[in-house]
Length: 292
Image 1 (cartoon, rainbow, N blue to C red):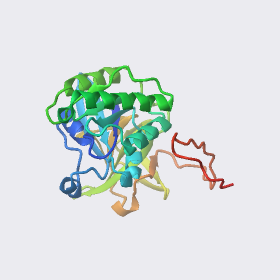
Image 2: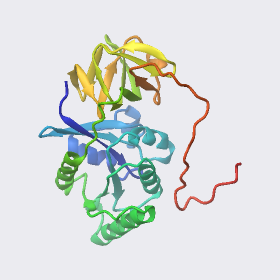
Image 3: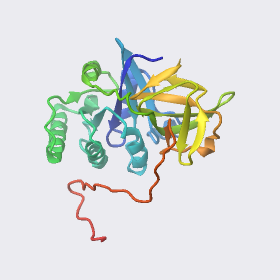
Image 4: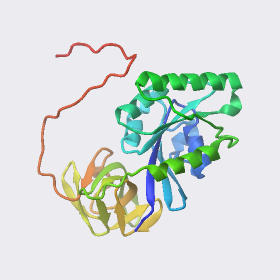
């Protein structure tokens, strides 16, 4: 059983602004998992890393910054406790900086920590200009301007220790436990391990799970028994809400499971073809056509 507190942190920001490099500098883990990502030098899918200190674990979800992969970015940040808005000093605020920032605010992610990267490649004037644009971005959204904007270099390591310490301090103050509700897992990956079968991973949004528990995955409404549980490389017998988890469910075939499905402990009794929605339009995006 993993008893330590865990805080989930999602990166956000434009392509090639140093998100993955920053996560690597803090954790020692390269969150780019795929050969294509390493060959092209860009993040395509969500990646994962973690860092532990004094009974607190920071779980990082690194997201792609390219506009073509925004759906993958959404899959990464929908369940985070805080966001890291990464802005490179040599380019300042760019289109996906704004898009990712808007997504974080629409999802209600708080706090959002602004981090200016690549300070080793920029002069003081450009760093100051970038900080001004970041503050304006917060101001336009109606959020209070951040007290601190961190200046770091993922290459040299300058400023990274200060940022890391701040994240641990914030993590201590966040109360994200939700153990009283039934288990609810958002699936973001599925894969097969030879000799073990299918594994699904995701963030346990509520409740707790134990080895041997029965879960039902929707769609299609198929049930399975958890054979093994894993949290950041550690085999566990029980896992609680707001933690990353991998479930070994050999009753499933890998091709039966896709990102966006949910796993719950009790069969859902309600299905619907309709849903109410609240639509919020980001500033500067123009007017919506009259589609009524």
